[in-house]
Amino acid sequence: MAELSHSDTRPTLRKKNKFSHFLKEWQLYILILLPVIYLIIFKYIPMIGNIIAFRRFVPGGSIFGEEWVGFYYFEMFLSDPTFYKVFTNTLILAFLLLVVTFPAPIIFALLLNEIKNHLFKRFVQTASYLPHFFSVVVVAGMAYELLALNGPVNSFIANLGIDKISFMQMPEWFRTIFVSVDLWQGLGWGAILYLAALTGINEELYEAARIDGANRWKQTIHITIPGILPTIVVLLILNIGNFLQIGFEKVLLLYNPLTYETADIIATYVYRVGLQSGSFSYGTAIGLFESIIGLILVIGANYVSRRITDNSLW
Amino acid sequence: MKESWQYKAFKVFNTVILLLIVFITLFPFVNIFAQSFSAESYINSGQVSLWPKGFNVETYKIIMADNIFWINYKNTVVYTVVGTIISLILSTMIAYPLSKTKLKGRRFLTLFFVFTMFFNGGLIPNYVLVTSLGFGNTIWAIVIPNAISVFNMLIMRTFFSNIPDELEEAAIMDGSSTFGVLFRIVLPLSKPILATMMLFYAVAHWNSWFPAFIYFSEKELFPVSIYLRNLIKGAEATLGTGATSQDNLTQIASNIKAVTMVLTVLPILLVYPYIQKYFVSGVMLGSVKG
Image 1 (spheres, each protein chain N blue to C red):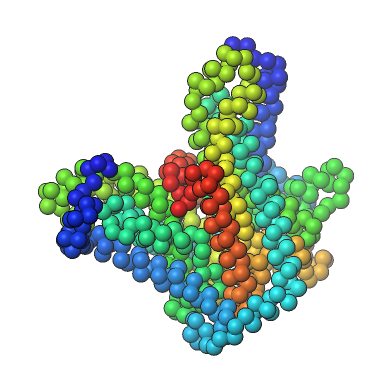
Image 2: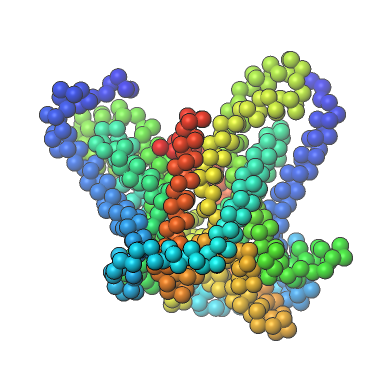
């Protein structure tokens, strides 16, 4: 199709055709005009709105603040002990999520791949995708019910002769609970791309390996895993790029003042400082700090991805 | 073909593991379902797991009789329908032009949209903007600011760009305008992707709670997700006040929470068998060039 490319790409004709191009295709530009305006208002103006991190903001006043205060709010959070605590909590939780919820779907996909009975395979897939569609509010509600003092988990451990645990009120349990909930909701869904990659592996490779006497384990090591390695690498890089994007809404629903010690992350702190206490500029400064780290991570991950896998987001 | 005993043992182990995963995945839901039909005393003593004990539909009756529940439930339906329509229209309006190689500035415009996936204004600047536009306590606060998912838009763009150019060119030869081509050729051919996108957006709107949580103060406007959220967090708010008074409150709420959860996920559950394959194919399409 590239060879058929129209005459307007030829340099000599380009200028002449530019005007007639717009005349002919104006409807295409009209179509995209509204979304572009939308995007400017609802995405780019808030980006510029981050300027209130450097300006004094008065509720009801300009959304871009009233007067410059320089790095006042940044110095404020750099001397705020809570900031260091939530920053550390964010890193720990993000690390745990990456270590647990990244490899788990790969293992799940590999296990599922060994199932030859299509009906059973379909059944497991259908069941495992289900939690992905549930609202985070329902998921949090289920966690509360399951882990309540009179809930099934406590009944189970009581039968084992262990004392009941008030899970949701104990800071030392928060991370385990959060990672488990995340895993529960995302395991099956996270496996979809791997399962697709697995079906793309050439069956002849397995036959050749069998003829050479490789058993199923060796086939997995030498054919299956290399076959899905590109997918693994791309998703790993994406995950590292989104490292800080912890399910903030889920934290907000699952934490409470008793568990702040481990549960409070940057995003929830921004929410409390900014929207609950009304320190808009201070909250924005902390949020901006996190966004910039996030952006650097994404750009860095994309750069690495382009260098080593030829796959990149842009 | 002979299999080693290790492989046979592995297959048994594998089946058991996968069944266990299915069990863990489904258990919380089945448990909530069972609780919703159970008598309080059985829930209190921790006896309800997979099957209702002391079967009754009293809790359903209590919820059904709650006016606010129905108002909130109806709100969710309205927000979902309106939000999905806005999202679909806006996404189509971007995705179609961006699928055309003849569009000037296509690369720049794509980047302009994709950039918002990786960097956004953040919670507070967004809040300040939305409230200063006067969207507080209106439906617009939840259906407008997050109307476009760039990821979904890219899936649509990929689909549109796979429609053979010849079809559209033939229509243009016959005197169709761009809008004519879009409405008479492209959209009818894109029914599968439009259905997929509709479901993507509808599920997202149905499950949404946070925008309503920060922008709405009147409970007549709440979606049902906030109704549920307040039940969950409300029961919890009593926890700090002292261990003795807490028991009654949380346990009465257990029943009620379970019923609300069941009613909240019911529509999703009913369409789930039909939507699952659309979602999977949508994710595949998106992965072609995300």
